[in-house]
Length: 302
Length: 255
Image (tube, rainbow over all chains, first blue to last red; front, side, top):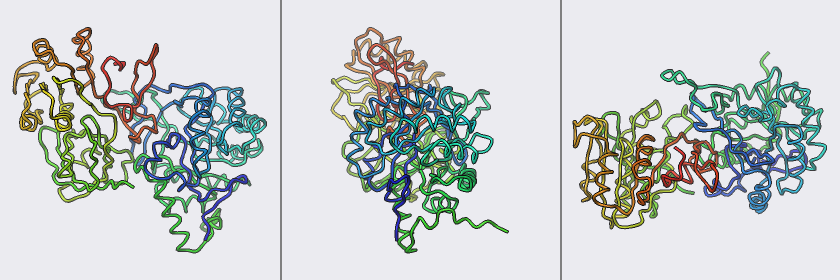
């Protein structure tokens, strides 16, 4: 049996990675379980300078999911390099630094700065729907996806994962653009743009008005998009969107994901990613299989 | 790994739209203090976010915590439907609670905010407490008996005078404080109460602490969903209600 997967030459002991923005920098969750139980962790989105984020309320529950508009609050990349990155260097887990910017120069600057990090990979957040300059502008048109990916790949020595937005005309075109720009992998999906409304006040619930939808309700959308991208590109795909159990992981891998990310489930159950990794490992052992053999094995109906 | 499963001993309606639940756990912490909260999972798959409830009271020997909560939506309605003998997934104790400094402590509860007060007396029984509770009307009054049973002085007020004194708890607390000169004040209630307290006690020299409420995600400080605005140094920044709070110094919070 084998649960180990490889992306851009980097080995993950299992395909379970925590999703950016749901896991901080791992410190809080490390009080619940050893981070080494996971394949990888993806950091909170980092920007060149510290960012305060949006006013509250920043999140609200919706049926089978939630909306958030945190707005990329983070202490800035220098703080990360001086503190969390060093702490994470002692953990036996792949660390992926999620980075965001407002301009192409921002992305280039942070891509260069991450060269000094312990973090082994970079995930480009070009699809944050919650800040005006959250990089969403880079995530919509295939031409700009390619441009920003190529610009970071050009300066960053670490493998670059481009995180794709579902709020686009054709996500497979954007996956192709990321591949053309030199991305080592793509991750998808980021949150779906949405709104929650209070009928009494006639106002949106979130201070930011709009937010990003995540949780089990988005899983069918994510599975379809992973399959579409799997058929469009040769680079590995990291699938995410509403994963709460090891069977969800199997479904994403069958649709073409080489690894997956667990996000909102961390809020419902603080040990969710740990539980899923354990259950997946048990399943693979019971089946005596290599988990890589599942990738892209979807059998379409007649 | 900490066991989050707790047995429901009771779950009863105690006032209009208010429930009181007692939970027993094998994994009772010995350092619990008032002002901390429990993050309760709604017992179905459709609700992805836990519900943060203040820990109303606790008993280290019986290994129980009491939660007192308002039923405001589908999630809390589901929790209200849980029966004795059922199990709930409860993450606690979370947050930065209230540690009284000084001897004479005034506790002020505005409506549901009163729910946080019994645990403060249980955690620090050796203080001299004066407790002021305010509710909109008699149908909303909770926890007066529980607090009286702890042998502390309780003053009750309702806005319309249907129970206790007629008037606002902030006015009554300010009058009492002028006479008794407490060393410290702790208050839990709606934001308007904090604004009034800020006005009434500004320059009094009495430290005032408050407990904030916000929509939460993880509840452990990782997701930055529940932030509030605070004054730090020369400027303003965000603090996490779940981890840096929910208890803050009144002057620190931007209301």
